[in-house]
Length: 513
Picture 1 (cartoon, helix red, strand yellow):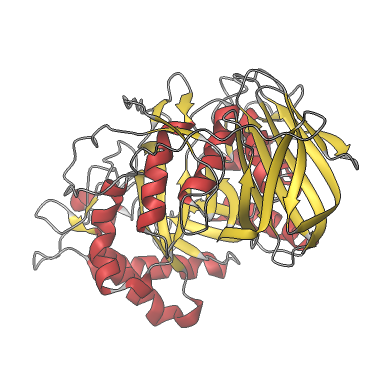
Picture 2: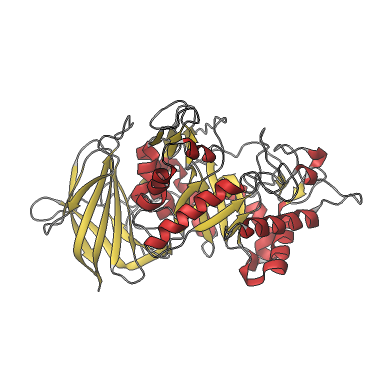
């Protein structure tokens, strides 16, 4: 959670347009990005040097147009990339406030019936306040039950990522739950890795006893950040001041395997606040070298690694691209999850999600907060749904709810990203196909200042029908007006009209050739 931290990273930019490629090279989706050249913030971490993508000199692609002057939008169902695990958000602080609204089920419908989010990120609060219990369990049950019931209606299931902000005070140095403390040491002078692992196993069993099927865990949220709120700092390697992430991770893995066997949650690491490879790599190096079978995937946030200012709520999506590409290339055999971010206007949020999908090849994208205190009532408030505990009738979908929904509603778990080309620097785009080939989804984002029109040109795919959903966000978005409009069937002419500052999702029914 970064509501009180101003992250400003200065960039020197070099601009590049990416065009078509094979699946083993750069994704073909057209985009512009700036190479990030700043250093990481001061920390105790060991720094490693890694190669970053070099600037290419490929000329800009020429506009391809049909005989009537329309641009051509291409997608190829035979060129595919990563499989999608899902989209979702965190439900932590303020999530219980949904019960103060007149109809909590309407809020659940918005999240899990309309936007169809399938991954819930929960905070592990086991033994935060009392032995053998967790203060947030009933709120977690409420959201999990609502999400699962709705997912069952369209033949799917939901997944839970359980994250630790801090273990209980009894396992922390000085009995301090805040982020400045690490694990405590035992009387023998060793860090309490075994006790920490036992606590994690008890926590998983506890939440499962309440019916919450914990599918994935991250043992520490923002592992390198000494927060003023609850947190716990681990080092890549054990020091006198900090416990080792690798030792803690493997102790937890072994204990979960011992207690749950094949039903043990899969593990993500290290969930840094940074998306820089050089910040992530030191934590994972020892684990991947010695115990690679323990790792399902890499988790990270986006608060370090790009150009953003959360006080001004601005974010430059292209500034993250070189980091995304480095992670994709270095961890090509692992799942990659972006598990928390919220900074930027709605059009930037959509573009950043798209860039993470095509350049990092993330399998899962999680927004920061599904529910938050809507005290400031800013429509671009940095959360999906705003609630107020003093107004029992109030709840509101925020701008980023619609930005995320353009991906989450139709790109289902198990869909596979396919090759797309807009051939225009203003259009960010991605495409996805179902495993059976009977459904395809296109997302097109017009970051430019002019309306553009396209005619679809699929390869290895026959379109039978295509329904268009569109939001005109503009550079800033003051209200719901013009958002997530169902424009109906695209029609036999296959023409897409993309207003400036818009996000368009095309839900296609057809057949793979």
